[in-house]
Length: 445
Image (cartoon, rainbow, N blue to C red; front, side):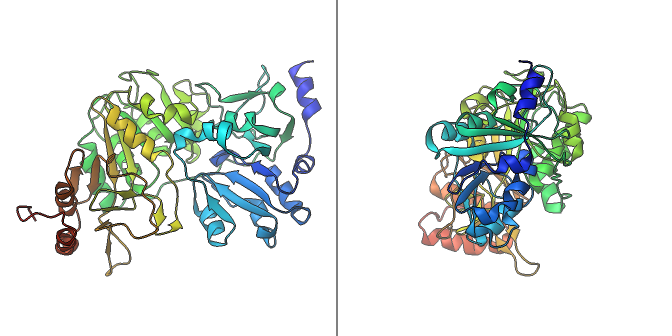
């Protein structure tokens, strides 16, 4: 049988595919820009027939249709590896839940730990002449998801970019049960806000630490984006990329001729990533680009792999840090905001790298004008999630400076962190540190 004949034999409508779901099933929607669209709408149309369908995904860029039905919690619940705005709304409604991860381990979770998946479905590119569908910008853990699923469905979207590169970034027609020809929706857009003055100040402090030939990892958010913009405008050269998430900033740096990967110890000349989300310029840049390498997350995020790359620069956002050096990057108390993602992986991996540095950046304050609150606090509030333990944190950067916490005692950590806090909070932080017995009379203010 030819690949095309096999394809035609497995081709079904989204409505027919949705009938494969039974009450009580786990259904996997894929990851980020590859989340299903047509299947999701068809499953939403079946809501009244179903109960306790548990849907798993991550980095949702839109609200799934199944949660736009009447009383969605009577039929569906959302289980996310990484929360975004949609996931937070579902969590606040009592029908969305976060699964804590080290992102590098997620493929193994599927193969060894999670409950059996009834149906796995995600968007893919059209089948090529060899019978393969490409996972597009979301190879991450897709192969592992399909391996352990009872029913395997691909949803074809002609707008998905073909992302070349590493292993496990495709699936063959012989390995899937059903094919849906989707609605070919445009790629979901994830733009970045223009950096403000604080972002720019933090970015300058970090860029000053980056040498020529460094390899970059940028997290999501305003400050990493500001660092990327400043790198694009700098005199840096011969840069490389090995990152979890590929974003617009990398395209800007590439277009300025600053990325060639010539100094990378592994994957020389290629920009490695586990998934991508950005505007059309990112998807267009990645499409059939042999200079980019779409990989599984257990490769990109493995600290042992990252540690093989000299001068690895990891740049991520934090929400708050206490005087012990514990960083929260994912919650407001017990209210979940995002997730651990690969931040811990890269913080650990960068320190393994010869010449490597990890930067946790944050504004010194947040809140309404006239009533600021410090992001540097004595201790984390009860219920707050520790994303990065004090022992792994290296550089911390605010608009008031940068400090390296590696090897520091408790009083040295307190002194360094207070030195980069907003001055209006420094005296009260010193008092708190003194009451916590982590301040010395010989300390500098």
